[in-house]
Image (cartoon, rainbow, N blue to C red; front, side):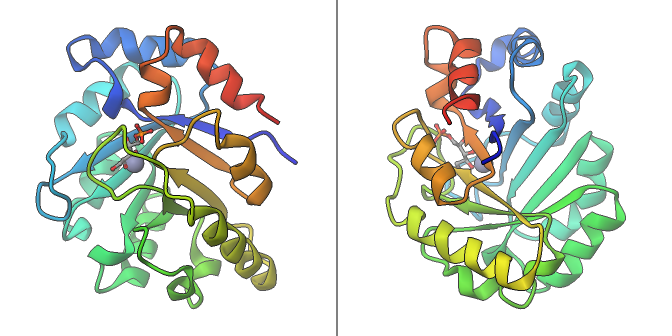
Length: 218
Ligand code: DX5
Ligand code: ZN
């Protein structure tokens, strides 16, 4: 079993000290920096957008994993690439033309991902799985950090893993929401490759130690 990719979510960081928070992540064993963009329409919360993503990129030495919780993500893909995204995920529920959007992301030389809400079955990805660099399985309802992990996620990971194996694809599985040391091991055993964690990391007494613990949980 490979060590998971650890992607701390800056949604839980201290926005007034973003530079030092990013420098802390640079020094840590984090692999990616997860950037949660919310529009107040697709999700009932507004986080931040392009200027903050650019500011994060200016200080980050690690790839930015941009999670677009927005309607019409196709209108902003080029801009988020310019702002520094290395990977971009769009929501299945926000895309009428998912295949087109995935190819658009790939044409920008970014890893392309699809995020699915807790109520969305992994079955809907069957016809596109081979085209995806990763699937972001939401283990909370998108919109807020600090929510309780939804246990049905384990089953979804197993189904998804089977679909990926059957397709002979190398698609990675990312888990986002309520991830902590309580569930990290079981998530990896079920087939998760990338763990996003916000509040668990940033509210701990030593975020860098917490990141290491997640990285070496298995
Ligand atoms: C939820 C976001 C998550 C969130 C995770 O809408 O997509 O990335 O920041 O936060 P925690 O780890 O606190 O659940
Ligand atoms: Zn996210």
